[in-house]
Image 1: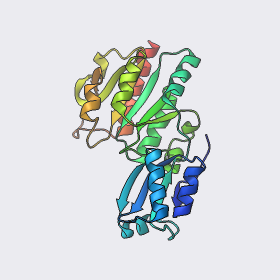
Image 2: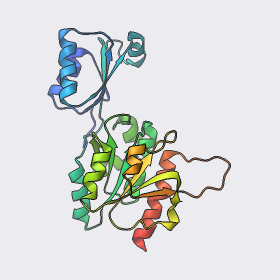
Image 3: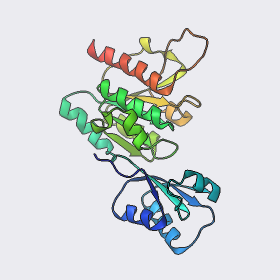
Image 4: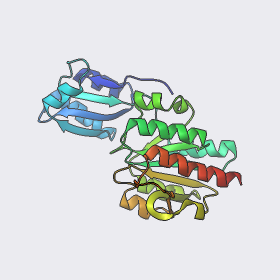
Length: 246
């Protein structure tokens, strides 16, 4: 895994990034722009299943670091993504039942970096994120992970629900974090497991939650009703660690 440029600006630069195989997370395109190079970029984005957002010139100007965006700005991953199979192989290589983090709509790169750091320290074999409505492996994520991104594979998938269904065939059980669930201390979290964490605002999406086998809540005694996503991930991860060690 190695660093790559985080923002790529300019039509030729984006086209060359695709041709060189750089993993691109998102593209922001000037709304209404239909010239030849831009159509090429749109075709490449569709081919690589890259999320495209159409925005105003003012928005692109705000995002631009060079002032020469030419109507397009791409966000490239700071690190290369793994495949889900690589995460499972990581568990097999260590002779351990798989332990995987799945993140639903974690859009804050600081939260994502902190969760990857926790995943590494808790002995998880990898992290899975969706392609849409999620932070990618940006330089901010890499810094916040404090080096964990060098050791913890992160896979990016098109459909989180289908990925859960596929991993169930590999013997994994899934637990998601939700305030309305059963206390995590009352659940059996041993064996091959996927820990599903949603964002603070919306939590885990309905379809993802419906495909989980268990819903875990974290006992709270304070006056507010939610934890930061990365903190919730840490609390639940270490209950899984405790049970795996007992």
